[in-house]
Image (cartoon, rainbow, N blue to C red; front, side, top):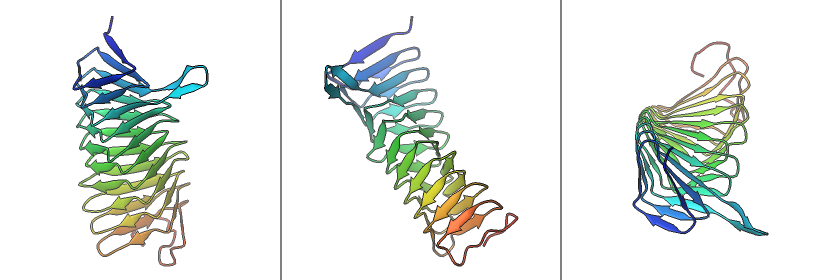
Length: 221
């Protein structure tokens, strides 16, 4: 059977190997390394009657094939998601303090994420998911889909944002950044500076941008 370590207190520097699971329920884990096939689960809830606890990870490293699963009442701070690694944030969970997602890595948001840096990696903002202050660069992509909401995303130097049946507020598109608003997607208060590009495809909407009009094909506005 897969090994599991349940932490309700404090753990420092654990390594989770393939088939292993570190489970935090109201505990704190610092500098955990999750290798291929390993899982780090962080959450909390009603520990005893009317006493709720929150689990927290700080500066976890998720390597290729590893998974950090942030559940309700869970907080992940400053995680590093390497290529092939994945972080999922469920409803009621939070990823904060600048999660870094490297090329080939993924962050899947159904809860909340603040200050994620997509250094070539991908962030999926799904129904119920809300992001704030994501930075996408070097091929990093934020996908706002199916009712997700992205606030204040910064796109530069090869960063991308695609919006389809989701909403993006206040995206800033700088040099070599790209925002695509697809069918059912809505962008509002977008700011485009020199060298940035935003395209609104058929069925997409960009509000409060007088110089960015919906078009039928993939041509820059």
